[in-house]
Length: 306
View 1 (cartoon, helix red, strand yellow):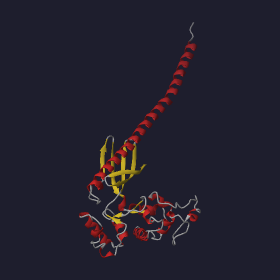
View 2: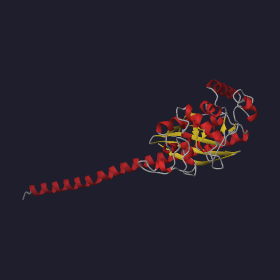
View 3: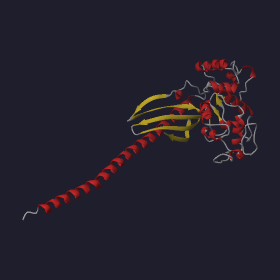
View 4: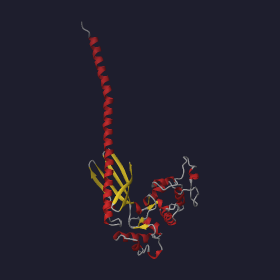
């Protein structure tokens, strides 16, 4: 007896079973592809971190070797040569070591006794003016750092001011932890912080500025001199870096005692590693703050970014 309907039903059933099996497998395959891609992304991310740690080791080695060679630091030394583009396995890196003491340390505004340092305040005021900001903003910076709630100057701001913000907060009443923290200080915004960032750093406690590595804008703020005098000084140090305060005192920029030498130096202990790591599935920035004492260098903090 011919039973075509039953045979057709069996075929439909078989096709349905296959369809259901395929429907079950397709999401699994999709998940597998996502898992494979995620694993590849993770591998590149981990490789970028390992490359960053390798760069830290390189930086510490270079700085330790430089420290063993002498105490004077300048822009003609090995550590100051940037890496434009260097090929690595499956990617490339670029970066540089920067003298953090070639810039003005925000935490130098406050002396060790917890009171403002008048010389540092005056220098910061000149720097603010040089980048197109109000010198009186130093008052707000001091209030952000000091332990009291007494408003300083005409632009000062304590916790009572910040309590009126859309999202209230308090003054830190402590040292700055990062340059970006300035965005929380009254009178500063993203644009003003961006203008100031190339010339400032954040280091523990007060630190001297290395005049062998400081950019012209910082030299001008330190001395109060005109641009022409500062440019002449910068040209002189390029061919013959200064070896100490006595030699500085003999230059036209510092001669005659009209410029305070306090807070100035020709050697550095703090450096920043800034690198860019690019791999097929990961690209990241690597930042490390390195402290060098003599022939020993160590990383105090690091940060990864996009």
